[in-house]
Length: 93
Image (cartoon, rainbow, N blue to C red; front, side, top):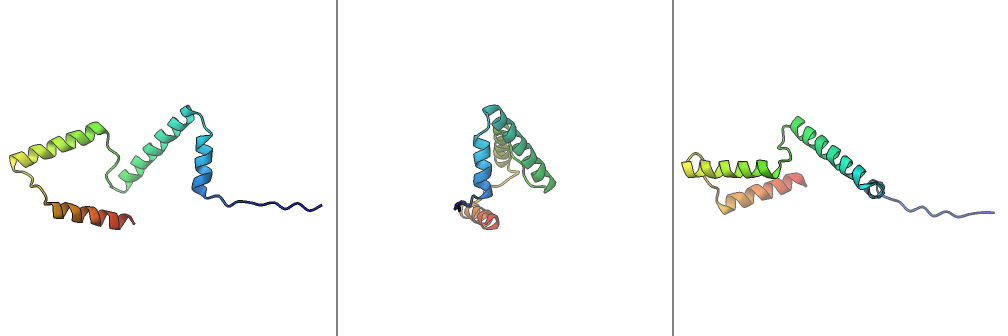
C-alpha cells in the first residue's frame, strides 16, 4: 500500500513564529526580554546605538534642545535630514 505525503515548505521564521505563539504569555515575555537583552549586547559589541528607553530618548532630546538654544549645536536643514535618512535606509538594505 502506497501513501503519498505532501510536505509544505515552511520558512524558519514561520516555524519559529508558530512555536512562539504556542507559548504562554509568561514564556513569551521572558523570551522577548532575552531577545532585547541580547540585541542590546550585540549592538554594544558593534559600538552601535542600543535600544533606548522612552525616558532616555526624552533626556537626549531635551539636552539637544538646550545645546541648540545655548549655541553649542546647530540645527540641520530639512534637506540634510532627508539625506541622512535616505543614506541610513540605503545602508540597511
